[in-house]
Image 1 (cartoon, rainbow, N blue to C red):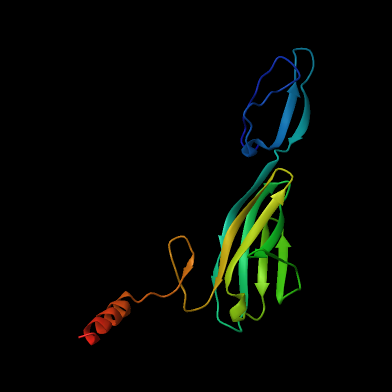
Image 2: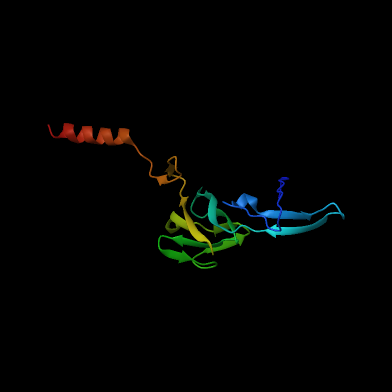
Length: 172
């Protein structure tokens, strides 16, 4: 494996319990005795695990500009990606979007952003072990974001207070 762990067994089997994805890699089996030189064979161990989205990047862009939403998922076997806007699945080359997937990263590309493009998108990563998703937002230049990255409308609590005060004063 990446680091040099040594396991000594009396038989021909090595049992790994409570295995984790970090234990995947190449193992060397060395058989030796006092009579001849050791015999060495390598064994590749692959640990399958469900997708885990490690990066889901929202983006702000102006109308008419290019926009790119990024989604990255670690998985073995490699994840397949799907993109959705609300309940509608998006396909490469349709509705003015391009989907580029390379390795563990998928990008949803808008070449000419319109007002209708703004909103919440879902990146779905799937393999034979499981499925996961992440919410990603394409937002306009006027939107602010909370700590979770969600777009929120600009607030003006002072404006609201002034409006309420004026309405109250006009009643008298």
